[in-house]
Image (cartoon, rainbow, N blue to C red; front, side):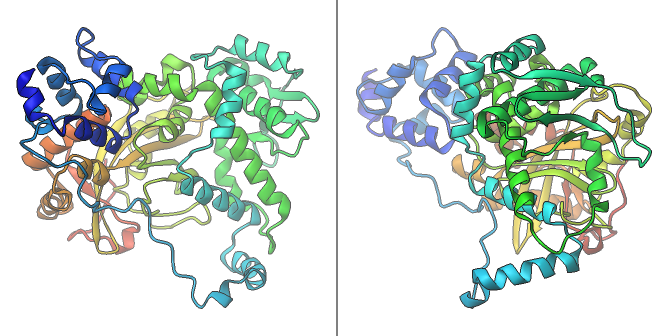
Length: 503
C-alpha cells in the first residue's frame, strides 16, 4: 500500500480517463469487476473515491482493474504518466460537404431541386423521408432519452417481458386487440402483419399467434403510437419485412409529401419505443455485459435478433457501430451508420454489382442461406452468427471493421441477413496503440494474400485486448478466420484477381 501511495499520484486521474475513453460508467466498471472476481470487486462509491484520490486501491484491486482494461498493473502508476488519449486516427463519420456557394443551398432552391432529383433518380418521397430520418438518427448517435423514458415508465424496466404481460399492459392503456386472417393477395403483395385503427384498436394477423417475439414487437410498436401520438392513426401499417424489396415498385412521386416525412418519423419513433420497452437500457446493457454482446443470446429475452442488434447500437457504451438488414439481391431494409462506414449500396437504389466480400452479401449467397430458403420457421440456422474482420480503403484512409452477422427468415419466410459491426480504430486509439500501424499490418497481409490475409500476431494480440475491454466476444471470434478486403462496388475491386462470391 505504501508503494502505491508513493507511485500512484496519477492513479485516480488515469483510471477516470481510461474509464471514460471506453465509455463506461462507474456502475458498469464495478459490474465488470464483479464478472472477473466478485470477491475483490469494488463498490461504485469506492471506485469514485479512487478516481478522486480519496482512496488508494489495494495491490489486488489494482490488478483486477488492470485485467478489466487489458493493461499491465504498472500502467496505472507513475512509471507511465500518460493520462489523455492520443489524437484519434479515425473519424466517426465522413465530414459534411461544404455547402458553397451557400446561396445555391437556400431553402427555396432546394425545394425546387429536390423533387427533380427524386424524379430523375427514381426515388420515391417515402424513401427519401426514411433517409432523412436515418441521417438524423446517426447524428444523434441513437440517443432518444424522451422515448426511452416513456418506454421505461410503461414497462417498469422489466426484462424479459412475456406476451401475456405485454397484453395486460396494452389493455391497461385502453387498447383492444382484434385478430384477422388474411393470406397473400392476388397481386403478390403480402398482407400487413398488423395495423392500427384510431383511437385504440390494434388489428393483428392471426399467424403471429405462433410467433411470440414478433407479436410482442407489434404490440409494443402500437402501444408506442398511443402513448407518443395519442393514437391518432397517422402511422403506417406493419408489413412483413420481406415486403421491403417490393418498395422499389412503388410509384415514384416528383414531390416530397409532408405525409411521407411524418409517417417515416412516426415509424422511427414507434420502432424505437418498442425496442426500449422490450430491452430497457439499463438491464439490457447489463445483459450485454454478461453475454459479451453475443447475438446467440437473443433467445433468452424472447425477442428477435434484429431487436437485439438495433438495441446493441443504442445502449452500448461504445459508440462506433453500424447495422445492416439486407435482402436479396441487394436491398437494405434498414441501415444505421454511427461509425460512418461507407455504404456499398443504399436504400434509395439497388446496386447491380455489390462487393460480394461484405459479410451480408457473402451470407446471402451461402449454403446456410440456401438451407434457410428450404426450411420452416423463423429461427436462424446452424452454425449461427459468424464474425468477420474487414479492411476498407476510404478516401485515402485505411479502416478496420468487425461485424457479426446472421442468416434468418422473416415472417414471410423470406431469407435475409442481419449484420451488426464496430469500427475498431477508436478502440485501438483508446488503448494507446499505434492504430495506423496496426491497421496497415493487417491491410498488408490482405494484399499479400490477394485480398484475404491472416491477422499478424501483434495485431491479433491488440485486437484480443480491445475485444476484452469492449466486452465484445465476437471480435476475438473474428480472429479465427482471415481478414477480408471489402469495397463499395465489385466493379472497382482493388484485389489483383477481382472478386468472386465466397462459398
